[in-house]
Image (cartoon, rainbow, N blue to C red; front, side, top):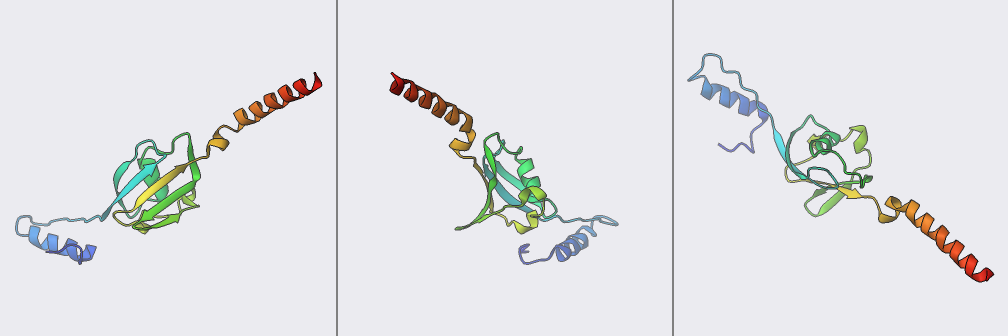
Amino acid sequence: MSLARQTVGALQDSLRQRYAEFLRNPSIEVTVLRRVGVHGEVKEPGLYWVDVTVTLRDVIALAGGLTEIASVRKVAIVRGATTQRVSDWEAGGQLASDLLSGDQVVVGRTSWLSRNALAVVSGAGVLTSIIITIFRL
């Protein structure tokens, strides 16, 4: 029996019918799960099995959430050769049902400059004061 071509309802009916030979009132519930990879700047990257009711935000939460250097603006879904940026994932609007088995969720990191802006500004201030001091002599 090929499961890929059956609807969830048809699969439930088929299983219920087969289990009826062994059980009086078989109660069967089928949940479709998708295997999704979560990579990049998440605390626990890996493969996760998700159903169609969870959001993309939930998938990222399953991976432990974002690291300290993650960029909330650099979340993308990679499917085959295409990459789709997802800008509103924090709002929870993107459902995992929009994901397919084999998709990869990738969370990018913030730029080095934005992580170290205070150090760059401080360094520039020190350098400027040294240059001014040298020219005054």
